[in-house]
Image 1 (cartoon, rainbow, N blue to C red):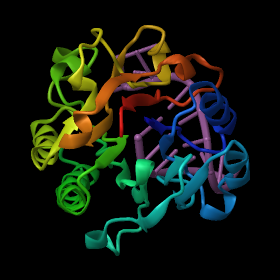
Image 2 (cartoon, rainbow, N blue to C red):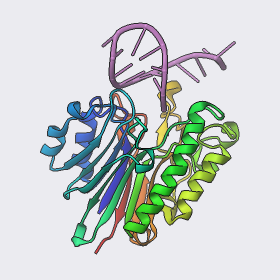
Image 3 (cartoon, rainbow, N blue to C red):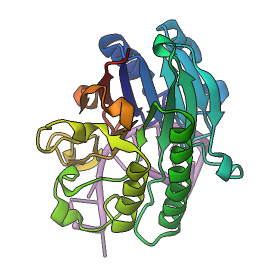
Length: 261
DNA sequence: ATGGTCGCAGGGCGA
């Protein structure tokens, strides 16, 4: 089973890329972030015509997450129950049953945090604490969980083009990394780190200053796998091809292959 | 480089 996560920076602006990428890579599951779309403007028809089911949790202009799957989606839940009053559409979960055994899919768009110490940064840390509880609960309910998304955290120094220059700014600050570590400690593995990887393997590059051409990037888009799924993972890497297409998202998709029985 | 580009909406915010 091929699963992927991709921050598309507007699903409508990126629809041609999403459809082309689905056709070329043929993932079983694609988790989308930053759809930036209301549900009624989401391009359901085009994606369903490509042979996929779609669940979407959207809002106007900002945020928005979707799950695209070849297999039927059940138990679709929007948002975190502990943040029922939070208007930001950042979490969507659904279940698929390959070989009749459930896999829980969680699609997350973690807050960016803007800058260390800002209001948005404090919101990010509070949000991450709730998300840790949420993923812990998911792990307890479903042994097989894929928690993919834009985590807006670079896990290690090697996930930043120039870690020294970046310092402890947002995406790399110790409290953010500690929050990610707490998530991993409830029973998840960063699929990328299960394998030998090339140096400077990133998933996001700023639109400005020709950052992609110079590979001035960071790895903030993650596929987290519960322990039993990580044992079945045989591949994980970013697919940087779509980042080179015309009018791209600033993020590349990250793909993992799971051998399920 | 206090820079730089996108997408939403249709100005300025968020990233």
